Length: 138
Image (cartoon, rainbow, N blue to C red; front, side, top):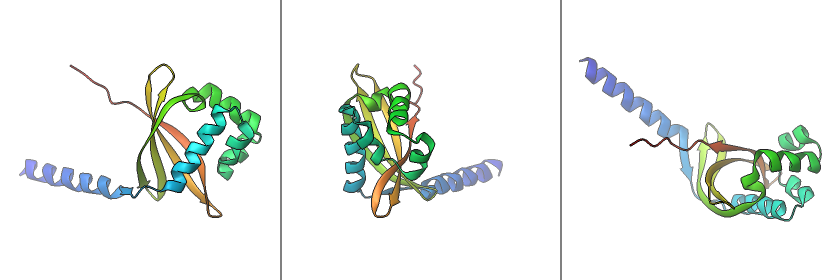
């Protein structure tokens, strides 16, 4: 009986997790926004890169130079990506997250999730988080 209850609870929790993370159709305008910001970083055009940031990020960093310094120090794989591939667009708890696989110049891979926000009809980047790689054991 206990196994039945635990199994049922696990099934309900998994169904809830699937409901909380809805995979959406790709949104080309979101990918264009992210790619445009990456292109601006590659050109060291922090002013242009800053334009793709949502109001919360713009308020936090205040200037393109401060924003650029943060990206250079905290997200070097974004500042100088080697290769970029776009994954799923997901809605998680009402927020849109675009998954991006970035390979840096040394060949290391990073999974990033870009939180996207519609600002007056244009997509802006409201945050980026690095998704921890799953641990592998033999």
